[in-house]
Image (cartoon, rainbow, N blue to C red; front, top):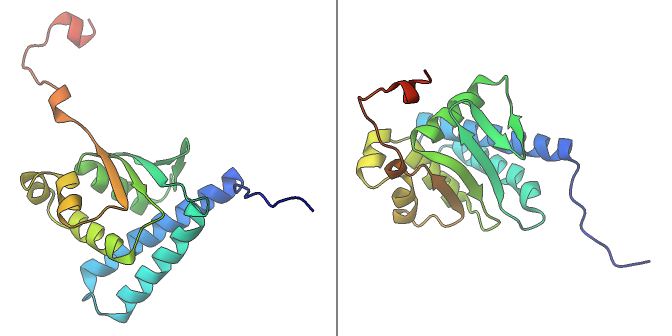
Length: 167
């Protein structure tokens, strides 16, 4: 018998695992807004979220999602396209300027808790304190990486010329 090789799950299985993790993450986020951190439902939800994450990093690579106002993108597939809570979560992340989010194999329960506490804060509070990247770094979160929109590449103007207007 030859050496065993790690196989990657089928795309449909990967999407199902990614969808399960995101669903648990959303549920956990809701629970920490509704209950004290020591409440058993919060603890159970966090454990379930971490457990649903494990299969996604079985190959030790980071799990990455693309973010837009309209949804969460995983390997060219929109996760839960008909699920309103997924769209709301995507819109929340996008409101912080996040365009991709990666969770590494080093992810700890505390990282998820702190991340959700940050994203549960008012957006303007996070922006005014230096943005989401700064907030993650300030809380010592290293296993969750985000790419954000660079607002310096955009310029707003009141000038609307025919070339810019498409005419």
